[in-house]
Image (cartoon, rainbow, N blue to C red; front, side, top):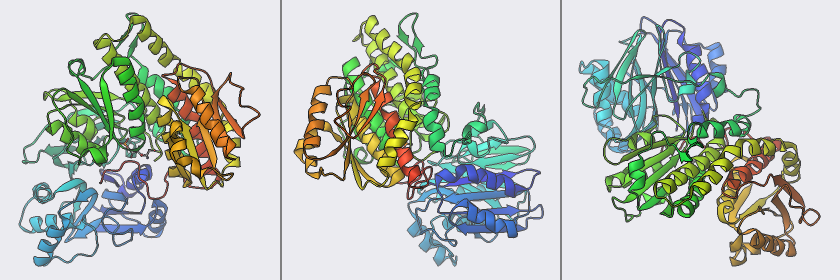
Length: 615
Ligand code: AGP
């Protein structure tokens, strides 16, 4: 996944591009580059290997003049990270930046080389520059040249193009990779994501798959894949520019951990009606929910973990069979699906390639499709749009922009959204009494207060993290609704601290993992009130009896373990079905502080990107 940005207007383009790339760097940071045109069409391109700082250093001595330009920050998919593979790429005065992947790049590269084109990089992206340049040489206008070029490509792209022959204009195209047009006063923007240019405008056009178009200082035009002009509405974003900044925190991840009570409040807002004990889900087709005989949840990574919790809640509350599948497996295993199956895609970004592909496959097989997503109008919500007979809508998580690569506030809002969905299903199927419904609604409404209490204990978590900053391995154990939280705690630790960690169902220890126990490996046990509490304590004792270094997460009023184990973290006792939201907070903070104490780049861990928009 990469970040692209474009500008045309009356201001110098370079600072706008660099500022935008700064806010997009979480999308990938192997290399970066910009290209600007002055009003005579004189082109200047600068590229640098590594993070944006390297490009900024280059520009300080070799600036890019001009009021039109494009920029790119790269997460390599084709061609290793290097300056020559850094975007932008150019051919005969046509310069492009691209986020996505060209799946038929080999045949196109051979065809273009046979037509005399000389490639200077290993990337697939350079193919766009040559295809567009050839079309321009045949006399096609820039927009038509771009449309023809993308018509030759199979894969995914968000593309921004400048041409020396058309100063003051940018062309664009998008398919399966995010791209928005920012509409300013006498200036226009292109960006992979809203925060990149939110400081300059709050008015955005969310492009559809297959859209191509042009922006100039005073106007924009969008055409569909057939070249027919289409109207795309301008939407006003309410996020403030500050909201997408760090807000005084050392890292985005810390800001987003602390923001979680507000994110939950926002996600619940308007969806709990206590007066008539009802759940009100905006943007979801209740008819689709009512006709559902089976639910299949598809997701990746942290979103898959929230799906595991959601499936338990759906089955226990709504008595509907619900399975959870890794999207990357589901899409290739020829699953048994039918019209009574509701497939729910969970995705923070709404752009994850495996989840998007699995969702489209489910829809192709006639399933109703619904999504839980944090980005308005992203690709996955578009597939679920109500109106085509299969789209059942999107339940948005309203967590606001999540910049840290390690997902935190998106995860807890997914848990709450799935809880709401389970309650809505139960309500529609009359599987819960009004009293039971009100019990869960009250527990959800109390969550933000309990969360604030847990977050206020951050110093205790940091102290525990200091004891384990050099751990080689770590195990997280949980049962029932807390087993997915054990998985999530392990994923958080491994992805930002690079310590090998595994989450396990506590009952599985005796089936193999207990052989790992030694006095060097911390084992954190989620021993919170609930159906499996006594069994978890037995698992904890088994671990301790073999010399394991046991840590435990317990409730405020449980002191049964205090002098028996190495470290205790506490959360307030809350309803068992909302306990997963509280339990994950200390694990997020633990991983954050271990990684920070190890001096690692918490927001941009090595090898990762915020949204995996390639397979
Ligand atoms: C979360 O901490 C990870 N960075 C990753 O597992 C992420 O959850 C996964 O890639 C799915 O992303 P999505 O929710 O945007 O689809």
